[in-house]
Amino acid sequence: MILYGLKNCDTCRKALKQLPDAGLVDVRSEGVPTELLAEALAQFGDKVVNTRSTTWRGLSEEERAGAPIDLLQQHPTLMKRPLIQTADGLFLGWDKATQAALLKV
Image (cartoon, rainbow, N blue to C red):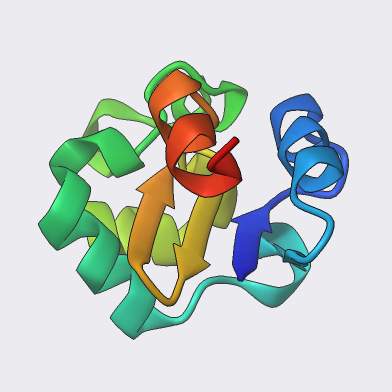
């Protein structure tokens, strides 16, 4: 299980704490593989782009109009976090549904 996020993101830290077997890939320093971004965009659509982030607010209207995959490659911190890759598929965010699916308590 791989968790794509930021090491200083509170939500990512909560997820990592509850998923001790998960490895963290810091998207700020390591980025996200293009194939994985394409798969996430196909599955979750525009929800992958966090339009409430500080990074988003710092973009111009012209930059915001770009293709989501290009935006995420240029600004990996725009990705909604965490993006969790498992053998069963992808999960976005750390909501009740994701927790129920991954923790199987």
